[in-house]
Length: 559
Image 1 (tube, rainbow, N blue to C red):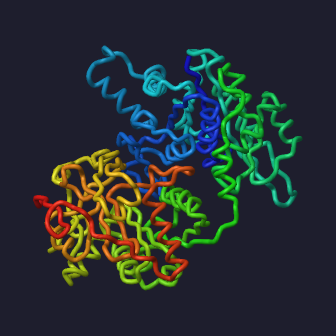
Image 2: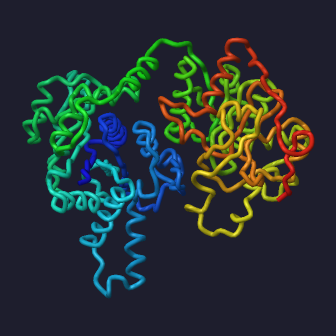
Image 3: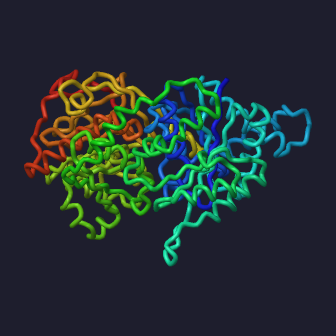
């Protein structure tokens, strides 16, 4: 029977429930178990897709096109699994489903209540993860902190799960924080005691307590938490803040957490986890390496979580290229005001990530021009590809009116325009081009060399596309369309010939990068940045692409 592990948080938000769950998932998978994951978010939005990155950080996109919480990125990177639509459920989604049934008359005139209707729907979605994944163990994380009003229906559903499935098939993990009082130089366990008391008041008795802290946790504190929270001392797991995110599975392994969980749930596994490859990866991450400065030019840089997957993909690629990546955060709006240019001058590679809206766009275009003219390696992600195309078209046509219709609806030269099937949409949420789509690579290009294959599938999240009316003239002047949809209609990857590395993808490669398997485009970009660092200008390895049609141009009907 499928086993369920539920993660709740206490004391403060952002305590690390998602990373803790992901790390335990890695340990369980390393012991031969299959793992499924779900994040329950108490906010009323149907999904985070319409939320500002300042509100909730990055929107992570799954293979099947779900717009989800950024914690799902941690799950995928740590456990190396692909999640899906049922892996992220919000209050808004739960209520929308229940209200939809009520409107259809499915409840036969009954009064709709939080208990049992809302809690039953929450439990249905939890069981759906088990049904779709067929996993041995399902990890369920509840967002927010114990005591939040909005999370109460989820907590009640979790409480009922033990009665429904039995204690032998359910395990509750409570992740808390031990604050450090500088004046007395000591950690305090009292907030954890209050948090557990609040949780028990809801009817959930934690089986495991993960005690997070920024300092070493003395054994006496472990014993105190065990005594006052009524759990075995063995089940109180110290979790000091780690210098390397991906070392957390190894730290948890040292505490014996996976052994306790396996014994408690009666799981049949191998005696010890296979972590040799993971340990070797951490050793390489810890090994001293030369610093490589990469500039991320974005509009949400004040909240770095808005670019979580980009950050992690860079670190993965840095390790593979034997470099310690140091990210230089550059606000694109500052470039427009003549500020922060000294930061741009000091980097060996530039990334322009995705985003929406007009603010800061001209600064991103300036960064693309800087990279092109200075021969600095450049990687454009989604909007980053689009601003690269805008900048290059302005250069080719000698016209600064070139733009995207997202930012200038009446532009004379809409090199980026709205997809035909997006023009009449009223709803903003969940209506973009979302999820994995195929991309045919053109032999002999930098993209094809990076992937070393002909066809790839990558995740998208956008509405606007490259306007094919400009494909021929740009190809004549040096833009190479190195990745296309299999029917040739859509530009997926563009690069600049004669440049050491200037490439943009319409998709988001960062979502598929793994710490032990960096994404090919990020790996190639960092390699080009290393070459730039070592020589002052990356070696130009551009070659003539072997594409159908004359002069390297694809024969595509303009849209």
